[in-house]
Length: 353
Ligand code: NAI
Image (cartoon, rainbow, N blue to C red; front, side, top):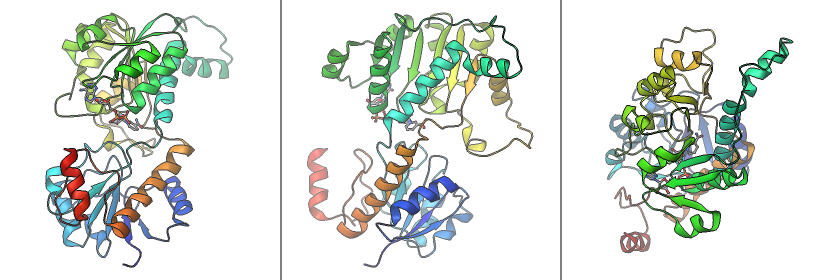
């Protein structure tokens, strides 16, 4: 077949730059759109073989129908997470691929940056010294050394996070429904049940995917099990935390600080410049007003290495699908059943299940 045409949604200049560089080796017809996909604008995929979306493109059943009616066969996610896609709606219509890991180091290192900044208050010190205010009252931190960090989710990112924290000589404890015992032994990490992790941790860092089971896992009840003054870091997904409950706990001092790279209503604001607008999300405004909260705009992944990997893996996923009729980097245990896959791969997937 001729080179596939790809409609690439929600692109910024940096996405286009890295995709163009990588596409020099592929020669695909890339059509960039700066807007996020909606059911109204999804028609721009007319004549495209593939729609390529990012984390804040909500792929609803209506959008899937528009894609399919315009000839799209493949949905290529530029993300690891796929909670923004209605998988049921894809069945029989579109196959799906993703980028399972673009740089787990980038995300773990950003989580560490949030932790150290909140602890040592370098964000506030920066503002003070620029104003020739060299007072240090109010900037008191604690030694990370010897404290206990609870890592929730020990996949690619959580494991790197734990290893970094071991480097600080913290005690690292972890929870994961599928513990990696060999790794834990090597790094001296102790798995335990969630309630025990909450009870022991000075810092809790979230590195699990968002699923129907763990939505709002950080809520009033779970916070009440944590140490008073605990630090909570979320680079996972916004809806892992019920923001209302976090705000209440921050106000009462139950939670000492929070570093949030993701926010449950981030789709409205993140990745865009709203500095000349009135932000109307009261919870976001309250988070931004607290001195012990640090919000970053879903930038944990944002390194040169990660953007190179996102472009490389996405274009290779698309090539494999259209040239070899194979899914490379699909969704675990998910088969859209479009009948477009090679027969032997289908057999392989069945026997894996
Ligand atoms: P991964 O799939 O390698 O690991 C996820 C781990 O979480 C697995 O070990 C799994 O068993 C575990 N898990 C599943 N449900 C759990 C639960 N209820 N409680 C505790 N653990 C649970 O994923 P990876 O690459 O480590 O990424 C983790 C998450 O980080 C992604 O799902 C995504 O939401 C988020 N992420 C955020 C980015 C950012 O820029 N802020 C960038 C990339 C990923």
